Length: 459
Ligand code: MV4
Image 1: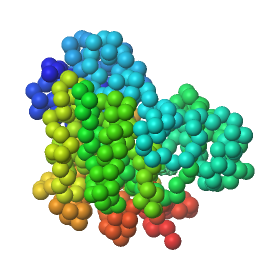
Image 2: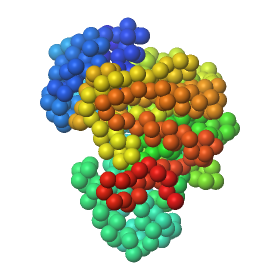
Image 3: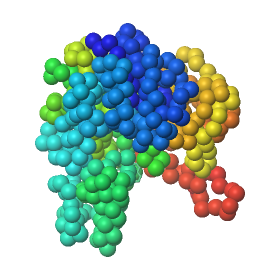
């Protein structure tokens, strides 16, 4: 087992990895930017190294600085968390060259899944259901029109290097194709340095459902069920839950089997997520695979009782998975609300000093956060300050626990999205489990005279 792990991240996820290391008896190294000197991840790590100025590009994305910090402190592994360098095949390769273990899949698998078009091909070959679309990148308008003609409108243009919505364009008719293609290519080039795009059939208001897998270096792969992540806004997930209200045990077993086989086909190791879109008929289509620990992993932990971060560390150290698929059981229901430092009506960031912070615990409540009274929420980084995860015997109990937890949460000094979550929970469609990626459209801020604007329901 590793003796010391460097955590190449900040905020709640850096603390989450420290928690796992402490339970495993592994020493930790925090890295931090000048903006995070007083952060809890620095306080609770055994050692810490400043890796640069506040801007992410100069600190948390600085591979030489992070590798140097690992070498100076004698860390034998790096956990990248999520975001930042978590899906960097380059960091994984540099780690390999420096004899530092990267806690994640092999660089070749990160590269494969990072190319969304190649990933689709590999998954299709492994028998995973796929939306019809182009086989590989599409460069010219003529080819794009041919693909769209074959599959039918609407279609969606996506960046090969994308994910998370950037470089995407929905095309409803041939007349829109030329502009949409050029815009998507330009956006993709600007955002990722790679202008390649591909085309697939566009589903209107699908559900976003993803499966969690774990694979060890001995050929064992298991799935930990699914998470429903349909409640998003601008490609940022807001609420996630497990199990999905839309899945029967039978479909879960079938889909689980499918993703395990697909993961084995690409020799997937460590933690991974296979994302699907589900249409209104309940049909599944592979969308993309994420080669990192995800923000919403706790909802899976709460229904399975499996500590995904500890498993990631054990797997990276070469250990076998400590359980078989038949030993994975799903108990009750869990829901996560991401609390952001944002104005809940306009969704604009609300950084600053938190003067009072209190979140109640109690049965079935888990809080993953770096926040505390008098802490600073920096404008340099993501605005998520806490995840509230509630578990119950069933979905109804999980929702009731979430509601009372949100109602009893005290945050002073900054604005948060707590009020928005209470509105989501109060929606009849939410309580009925009628979810789709269009769910948040009802909260759009109408074009408004200056000074007004509200989280009012659309007419
Ligand atoms: C789609 C889709 C419908 N059909 N692909 C959004 C994030 C990125 N990972 C892929 N996304 C989507 N892909 C097909 N074939 C719907 C989404 C989607 C979405 C698209 C446009 C505007 C808002 C959206 C919100 C959630 C999901």
